[in-house]
Amino acid sequence: MSKKNKEKLGKGLKAIFSNYDQLTASPSTDKSSIEINAVNSIPVARIIANPYQPRKTFSKEELAELSDSIQTHGLIQPVTVRRLSSGQYQLISGERRWRAAQQAGILEIPAYVREADDQGMIEMALIENIQREDLNPLEVAFAYQQLMEEAGLTQEALATRVSKKRSTVANYLRLLSLPPEIQKSLKEDLISMGHARVLAGLKSLVLQLELHRAVLHQGLSVRALEKKAKTTTPKSTPAPKESTPEIQAVQSKLSEMMGTKVKLTTDSRGAGKLVIPFKNTGQLNDILEILGY
Image 1 (cartoon, one colour):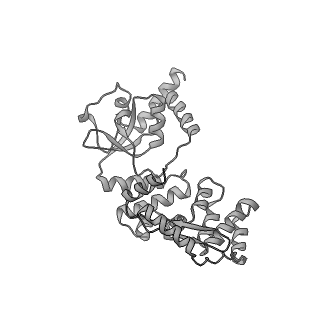
Image 2: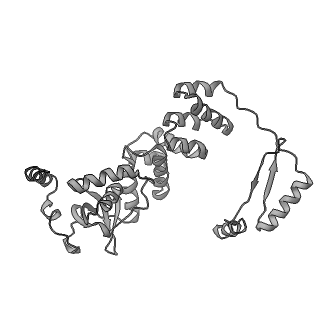
Image 3: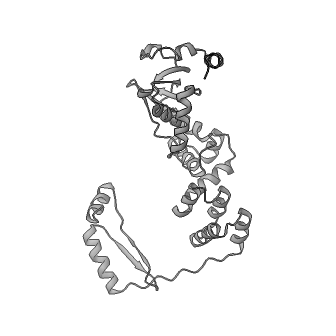
């Protein structure tokens, strides 16, 4: 970039940030110079991640591209943080930019510093991140659920907070009831939000899985899936087989080994399931150790 272009860019940033000269000055760690509710220059090493970040995965390719851009032009859009009593700063939003800045070797980045207690930070982080358009439907759904739990909100109150219709919030939350296999397809963009909504509206798990496979193998549109859902009867599941002395003996032996009441069931085809319940993480660890995990 030419010196003339850099000067133009600097003038543009001055129009955005009133303290642009402070941001471009040499690094400073003087806490007293930090302005609340304003953009400050914060050392990257003093910023920690946000545990309530809805996005759980970050594309390596996109991070590399953003990192290259930051190396060339700097970080134009500030991240948002809150100051902790330890002197560190916790991200409220902007984790992808923060990660890319670290990757680019940048020592300080512009950050909008806000005042917030734990509850306020949780709400701000989730609400700000929910508004992002690049979250997949499941990430939005988990963020909605987390915000409801953390802030004690009803679906209607949550809808008001995030400026969405209650029906929209309900549709996202319904995705969390889908079986893992269908959630995985949605996360990997193999099916759309429309497909997932149709499947989530079905009461039969067997029918959900059957139609999910049809979408993947036949490339059904959402409208075709809706039509098929109305006309398809779920395949019958083999009736559970009556417990035999042999099965009971195995079940008893496993219960003794695991230290918990194991349940073993089979059907007429010989298929079945083994359920090993546990009361707490300590008992779970004991079971995993027995299994050699």
